[in-house]
Length: 167
Image 1 (cartoon, rainbow, N blue to C red):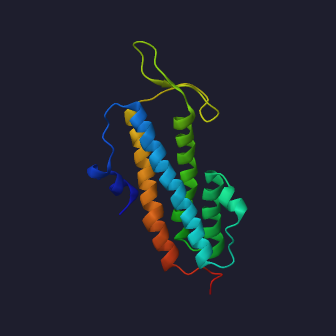
Image 2: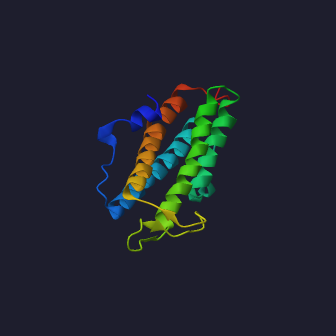
Image 3: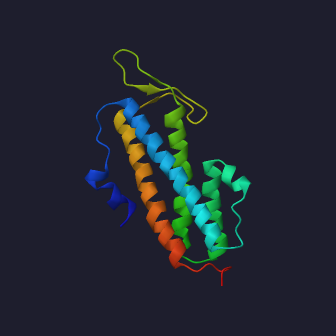
């Protein structure tokens, strides 16, 4: 089941009720679960592959760096297999997802009379942007799909593949 198929299942979606704060909470909730799954995935890799070390440096690294470790460790441990590209590409695409989460969470919201809700520019976004609860719920849903990937597909790959340095 691909990510798009998962995203199309209605009962998994957040209903857009127009509440910006609830939508922001949904982003925060799903992103927190995502970060925990990434940490668990890294710990799982170190448990299966003795040459990897889940050091304090890795544990305390920002989530963007931990996603980089996931992609790097998969490539390093599993060699030049053609089926690796989809997994490393997904972990690398999650870096962009985290950037959009940062922009959503750190940008202050404002609305002038008669205009759409805007998000102030931050170091993550260079200009003010229009936003809505629907946009924020869509981002929360992307994190939910990412959670499903890391919690299932990535784990299945990890447990059904044999790394080159484990043999």
